[in-house]
Length: 506
Ligand code: NOJ
Image (cartoon, rainbow, N blue to C red; front, side, top):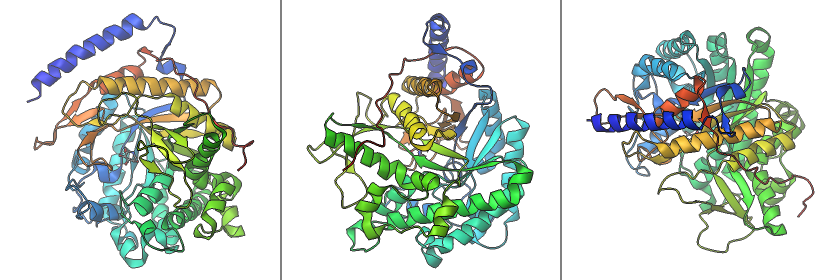
């Protein structure tokens, strides 16, 4: 069925290899060897998006299952998706052939501990043990995320999930099982995926699970801030647990992950420059400042007033210093203006009281395709370096969304990866303490934003084939060539403007 596509793919691979060889002598190329030997390159996935087997072997539903099975959704679910639960051995083989050095994946809480609390499910335990062993057997380092939008529905029903502080105890107990069972082989632990975006998209806009729209209701407390607060408390509880109980023997690291878009002022006016700093405070500082300084940014507290929970002294101490690294998911760059001006405006800052307007700079990509703006990544890395004292950073997700149209010749994705990896290298040469890069994603899978309409994968998965056969795309070939030491051409990335945190006041 895909024969013609495959032969075209080989043709374009030939062209690509030719270009790589021909242009390698250009001054602006880079290779794997330009990165430190202990830098890690991999790819990323998440349990609900990859595993399938949603009702098998004791797994219970999560808020994500509930959300996609509700009327809000277009019918696309993770019931089967890539069927990684059954096909992981073949996939790890493909990962190894591609040359991945690491895989970032998440554990399904409700597969390991059905209903979120209580006894461990032996089948779930066995699956993750097998999966981790298979990765290690192939020399692929496991990086584990504990929470990726898939709260056990039972905990949502019982006490409102992340809206309640009761979650901290249950999350800690779940993490304890993971550290105890897998920590002999897993050194890199991320508590929560996209903590900022999960709170905003899940509890303010409602376009991901659990799909709450509280801002349309009169509410004295904004759910988004409450969930963010509980994310931080839960994160710091497990960081403390790891430090006290496991660190000495297992010698691993615990971090958190955020979504970070590149942000630039829409104009050079003072107002837009200040608004851009405010955007960084709201999207990055809101959850990262407490981890380094023990409290929320002043701008956020000032705007949110009593709607944002205050840290007690004890909480502040526990949260401050509780990360070994920051995980960053980066895809897009936006420009920020102080107030609405045109219909270009797509969205705004989540705090309902403050006009913080955001425009997506679309450039000229094909419809539904992410534009290539690598300076945004440079800007984010520079911002984190300057603001937080250059902490270790893992780029946990970066990759290009395109339409899921069956083509294996994803030249735009090659361009995208090429440019962003080059931009990361520029940032590292400028001192950024970035330690790893993971392409989202290895296989086309269930996409959180639109089901199976779009794709990010290095491999195409034929959903019409009973066997869900995987086909390598041009981007997979390109990444493989890079990982195996081949030359690639670096698009010279321009240094992004970035915005000093201090020096502006409102
Ligand atoms: C964000 C999420 O972590 C992941 O679940 C999603 O598929 C990708 N980035 C792309 O939108």
